[in-house]
Image 1: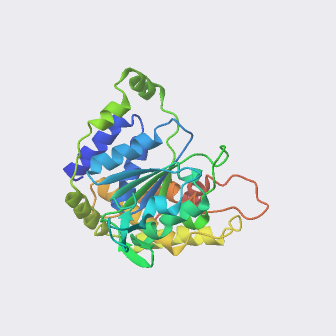
Image 2: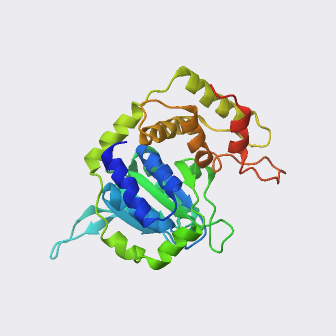
Image 3: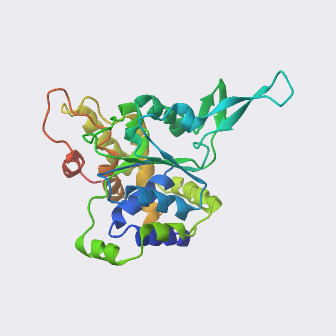
Length: 308
């Protein structure tokens, strides 16, 4: 593994204790140029993990606290009329919103209304925003790291399917294990640790690592395996629809990033298996009338499809 990425993993694991797999999935997601959704109950470290990721990568960082009264202009910015003193006319000047940063923490994204949530769609898909009839590019690289509370909590608006599909991976942290929680209770305040967290990699280095991830070799047999998984999801009558072509491309890129973090120059079936549970659940929706839980579909389908 690249030494800078190894330092990044170590540093984040020092902040978020006992969650090595989740941290590795997060870094793989950003290396694959995807956006990340962290979902869980309040208080388990979602925002802390997002902060640690952004600071460790050394990228320009803005946090947006999503609330029920948030408006698209609060995210994107707006054109404001400026008139100089003593003059009868003026001009409109654009004041950029917090979306113009390399890493955006959309904190509690499902607390905002669908209208505010939709402000992120173009930014997440195309790395640009359209405001007042003008298209404005966003910084490079550009990542959205969103945290989400469970949909059954008070004041939460479910994310639409089109928005969920823009997130490459969705992870859940869960409660810490006993030893990790004891270290958390005895350790330094996480806010103090975050305040003093140095960048483990520069922006230019991280962009270079993304390029190398894209060069990780994928064999024809591996592509057959990946396509078999996608086809199985589309032929399963328990779902309204299967995995989209965007999801298939995301699965490939995420598997390449996972292999790269393991220090390999080629993708193995195990890499696909490692990232699939974080890529599938927020993209597959049960057919009407079906009440059986489908969370373990990824685990079941991996047992059914032969490994090349």
